[in-house]
Length: 170
Ligand SMILES: CC(C)(COP(=O)(O)OP(=O)(O)OC[C@H]1O[C@@H](n2cnc3c(N)ncnc32)[C@H](O)[C@@H]1OP(=O)(O)O)[C@@H](O)C(=O)NCCC(=O)NCCS
Image (cartoon, rainbow, N blue to C red):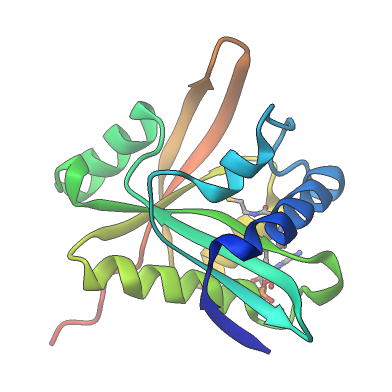
């Protein structure tokens, strides 16, 4: 198993993974018109995939944006300006390979990359995504509240805002 930076040639496989995750987990909740753009995240600072035997089985991205409500809640909770936040997004693991630590390792990779850029890692998760919420709780992330995020004219999501764990002093 190999985790590495995503390249453009991975995008078709990432789109297939996102389609499966939509069907199984409702993530993304509704299929966007352009699923490739959803997974690619054009404003991504970085993105990684986990590969096994040539198959993409995991994905995560780091970006600088989320909804205004998410950024405002995290910024207020951390007393950090929004441009110092790094948003971890598009975390997906193939259903056949879950509970083997892949999600955790992708989360920690993106988190470490955000910190290396001087950004405080945050994320938002729809309130019904129980597996993801269990993962964030297990990894020491701190819930900073719930917000209503609006995407376009017709998608309204209730989301928890999570803050990356504080590093031990020293
Ligand atoms: C959330 C997701 C990425 C987790 O990936 P994963 O590789 O299975 O996670 P890990 O194996 O690293 O899990 C680490 C820990 O998180 C917790 N956890 C993960 N999935 C869980 C579940 N379904 N139920 C309860 N706890 C869970 C456990 O504490 C687990 O440790 P354990 O297996 O030793 O008990 C995966 O379930 C997924 O792709 N879900 C759909 C997409 C999604 O919701 N993405 C997040 C959008 S914000």
